[in-house]
Amino acid sequence: MLLRRIYRCSFSVARTCMTKSQRNGPSSSSNGTKTYFITTPIFYVNAAPHMGHLYSSVLADTSGRYQRLHGKDVLFCTGTDEHGLKIQQAADNNKKCPEEFVSEISNSFKTMFDSFNIQYDDFIRTTEQRHIHTVQKFWKKLESNGCIYKGSYEGWYSVSDEAFLSDNDVTDGKDKNGQNIKVSIESGHPVTWMKEENYMFNISKYKQQILQWLDSGAIQPDIFTPIVKSWIENIPDLSVSRPSSRLSWGIPVPGDDTQTIYVWLDALVNYLTVCDYPEQHQQYWPANVQVIGKDILKFHGLYWPAFLFAAGLEPPKKLFCHSHWLVNSVKMSKSLGNVVDPMIVKEKYSADVFRYYLLREGVPHQDGNYNEEVAMEYVNADIVNTLGNLIGRCTGMSVNPQQIYPRKNEDIYLSKITASDRETFENLDILVDTVCEHYEKMLFRPGIESIMSYLRWANGLVQQHEVWKLAKSENESDLLQLKCVIHIALETLRVSGILLQPVIPTLSNKLLNRLGIPANRRTLKCAKVSYLNSPDGYPLGPNEGVLLKKIKVKK
Ligand code: MSP
Image (cartoon, rainbow, N blue to C red; front, side, top):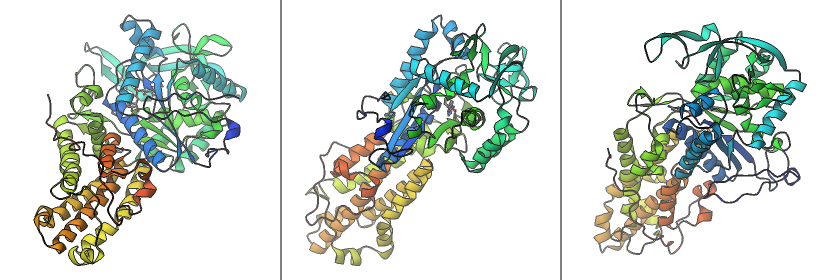
């Protein structure tokens, strides 16, 4: 029986692959748990990772963590895209053999993912044997289904995008030396004219199926759907191989090693390799969600479903397409020297600080603008001044000398807490539903905003009741009022901590530890039921210092 090898990063629990017979069938595992398959694009290894790459990964990771909190059997895959002319040329420019070159950069992606707690289950490299086998099997399937024919291609090619382009897709531009060249309208990258023999794929045959899939709302946010539809009109057949004499760094066409498989076909099939196509892919395929950036929408919104339909497979259930990060309003580029290296940001601040900012500020339908000072203002306002401040105020020895969750006295609750505050508090379970609704759609910003506004409300309550004064009083009613307010604030913190786990796993863990919440009571189900009203009050956890110190921007 074929076992799928699962590659796990160091911190994740070892996981044994289940065989077909152990599974209950598509979309559920042997214990009846629903499966959830999520992917990132696989990253080009022509240069070191930057914040754009991290963003795709953090989005997918946060979604995977959220689905795990729901008790789903998550398969989360990422990896590196190592073949093609672009990589071949980058290796040459670095005077390295491609194997050595790609391994070094692939490792730097792995290091970055591990540093940012990207909890992947499998890290695929397209140079691995298991992938080469899958791609060749997939090719043979397309061939036996009569979808590939030998032909010739004449047109433009962009090496940077590894894309074939028509006359309508290119425009006049200038190279670095000011010489006139042709460039891709979409990416601005230089293109060259090509005429060569290769294998072709009749993509227009799948037009209706693709349209139906698009109409089902497969691409999120919706704004990207009409863009893909506009590409479908008059789409020419797609070249799916290159002569090996021009491109040797790739996977040979089965039975014809004069041709190398087109790198995008090779790369897209990674999503099937990780779920053991053609042996066991039914357990996970079709993917629940595939995260992509808008620059690779054509490949995933058009080519990928067409290849899948041609092979008799279903398209992914959802493509989540995000926009790009600019840096101080300018596109990131090596030549401008403004590429943000996540490892440097992590060293200066922390992984969670950067994760928080990316998810708190980024929205999928619009480009984001990274400015380190503004980013740290957000983090200070939310995590230090709102979340951290509230923990400090409710767990400090002066207001909470017993270091417990105080019990809430019902009479005091009704007489001292206003009806409006009681209503807000009693709606904490609605906060859970609201946040889950946003997280389900991978809209983390509104989810985080809802949590923060609740925390601000709880801070306001603590302020309004002047807990530091109540703590000094000897009047029993004041002390009961103090306990009541602390109870409300701690409960808000507990629910917020649970909901923030997918976003800032390390800080949430620290918060929930401080609150003394047992590991098995940190699920979304637990967030919906009251925990704190034990007769004697639960003990708090150990004090490991402030949640996060106020950040000063470091140059
Ligand atoms: N190798 C292909 C993907 C193949 S998937 C079968 C590729 N790689 S990439 O390294 O260039 O990009 C990977 C991801 O990073 C894409 O989702 C892309 O959108 C994202 N980003 C690259 N630059 C970005 C920004 N400046 N901002 C946000 N994300 C961007 O394309």
